[in-house]
Amino acid sequence: MELIVVTDPDTLAEAVADRIARAITARPQTVLGVATGSSPLGIYRALAARVAAGLDVSRVQAFALDEYVGLGPDDPQSYAATLQDAFARPLGLRTSALHVPDGTRPDLDQACRDYERAILDAGGVDVQLAGFGANGHLAFNEPGSPADSTTRVVELAERTRADNARFFDRPEQVPHRAITQGIGTILRARSIIAVATGAAKAEAVAAAVSGPIDTACPASFLRLHPDAVVYADPAAASRL
Ligand code: GLP
Image 1 (cartoon, helix red, strand yellow):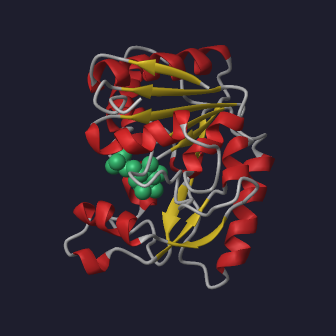
Image 2 (cartoon, rainbow, N blue to C red):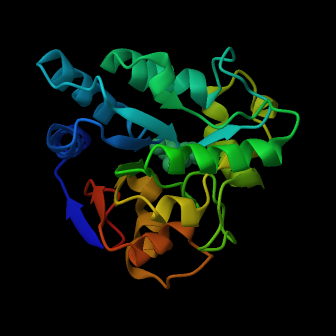
């Protein structure tokens, strides 16, 4: 796994947006895997600027990594709404081009199977963007998640709920469960770009890049992928 340390978060966003833009130029029907959280926001802004400057994304499709159970697209805290606002709308993607697991379906296991199938039907993810949870989680694959896991319903770690409480009015509103692509699902992407900024991610980045490859740090499984790169700023890379 390649590690690229860049000077600051803005440089990181521009570098990753360039990489994604090159992939889209080479293959206009690129299937992107998109992540939530604050880490990718600068990348989405930088990509939107490239679209404004002429990058054609009319044939791009995108698949979200995860979604909270119980939150639908009308809920502003849902990942469906977050990704529409931060990613799809600024890039001018049509609504149907963004796929997000449906955490409101009565049969959640069927929703998970349908999501796996939708990714396969689209031809698989070409470029997967991911962040790091402070506890080493990848999407919502918490420590303990196996390398061959697929899309499924998971219980969120209390650390993850606390980390994500800043997006909600009250901490107790953070759902306890989510649908997440599995580690195995994510590793099927043809290429993976993982990004981390800030000292709060330093431990997770160190464990992922140079610790044992095991379930204690799900992001360490990225090292099993033949084309995975980590972009980090100096603070996130400070424990390496
Ligand atoms: C959530 C998402 C993860 C993301 C993480 C990091 O837990 N499910 O996919 O990597 O947040 O968020 P941030 O970038 O805000 O630190």
